[in-house]
Structures are given as structure tokens and as C-alpha cells.
Length: 123
Image (cartoon, rainbow, N blue to C red; front, side, top):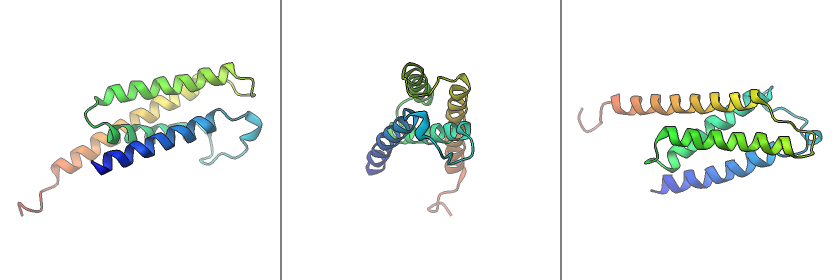
């Protein structure tokens, strides 16, 4: 239960930070942490996908992905309608979707690894 609440707190913090970074004026975005903004989009959405799955384990994974894709679309629409030198990009939305997909794959792999690992009590 504590893990779930910790993940929810991290999810809220991540959403605030990502939204802030995405909506800053273009002139203030000078450094790329991961080299290209597409990789940054993917990394952000991998993280958000894992955090939303940990925060709401009963939620279907596909629904979390749809919610996050809607969030990414919302950011792109906000960038298109703000006069801050930013613009909407279909490539950014594709990078978001690929990040969500990568996050879902990692979650599935982690689930398989934990199910296939023998229990210490059984050995």
C-alpha cells in the first residue's frame, strides 16, 4: 500500500515537472538532457507509464496508456495555442506513444520475470 502511495506522489511530481518543461518558452529550452527531444519524450512517457501502472494496479494497462496519450496530445495542443515559440509536433506525439509502448513492454517483462522466478519458500 505504501508503494502505491509513493508511486502516486512520484506520478504527480513527474506530471508537474514534465508539463512545466513542455510549456516553457522555446527560448528558455537550451539544454537537451538526452541529446534529442524525441528521446526525452520517450523517456518521460516510459516513466509515466510505469508510474501510472504502479499507482493504479487495478486499472487496465491499455487505459493508462490511452490516458497518457491524451496527456501528450494535450501538451501538443497547448504548445500550438501558446505564443511561446513552441509548436505542436506529430513526431513528438509518436515519440510519446513509443514511450508508452516501451513502458508497457517493460511492465509485461517484469511481470513475467517475477512470476517465473522460484519462490524462496519452495526451494
